[in-house]
Image (cartoon, rainbow, N blue to C red; front, side, top):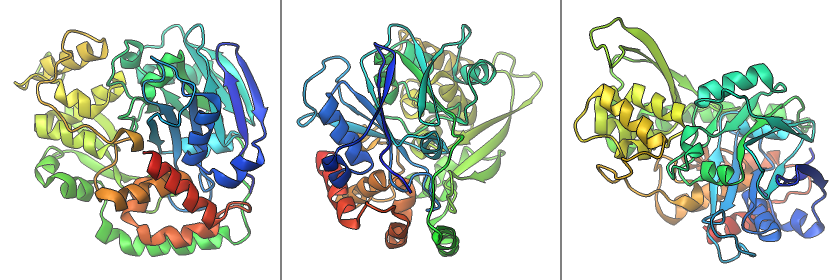
Length: 427
């Protein structure tokens, strides 16, 4: 299994160069630690995306792609990232595997394009793609790209909120949202990067024993899954049962990321009416709930009205946690939607009605609080280095030893420990 295929893209020059990492990088940096090393090498105004050595492999929950950037670098570039807070944003679903299946493991983005730009990556090649004339909201943009862009399996996109420079904008995996609560959408917009399209038409070589190992570990995880629980159990553990009452009447189906045997997301279908015509006919709405903390923030504020609101926040490219803070004190479906629309336009309501807790920006801040303190942070740092879902590793820390069996040649447990320590210490 190969690892550490790198491409450096200069957005201002519209060039892409395949780069061979030198020996020091190969020996000492893995996953998010390599993202960090690349920011230090290329400058704190660089934006780096990287998978880990397990991303896209047969290892369970191997879905993670990490977007890394220096806090405040877009507004005030500096020459070194060593004394700068680096934010690491976890991107899940199928983004990580499709990134690696597209022929690269790490992508370094330098400079800023002269106009809103899209990148298409496949078979190790990077192409610049023109933005559709009618980009619109996130779902409309994805739909337009399916018609006009080269074929892609996954996309990392920004929405109207990022276009307006809203600090609470969030990057999305297609139209499904993400755990971006640290400003990845803003870092992309500062580079005039509207999105990255991942062709995902390749694959990753695997060891002969990997499939057997995977099946055995999946069975072990499934036996432990009932105790660990899924979306509703995690929400209840983080906030109590009140936030689950807002799901009453919805049809729920468990959902999971790439190769994950322990679903922690849920697809919700619900009946709704047009808020402008409350007595009108009902129609079916749906949304993927992958952001536990975003759901909790909205459910605490709006209860049973939260499903259409979280869908609207995702449509506009807003972090649902922040969106909850900017809702009016008095609930009204129509005025709530108006408030989110105004927020996504950078409108007048940039004064939250109730404050929400600030997330830990260095680790993305979007993870449900399975654990707290140093131990949880160390597990998260290890997940960011390995390329597996940090929420999965927090729920099943006993799986670490089994996961190491999937490491490719040249990546040692000792190098993982050093890389994880570096990510933990920097964060």
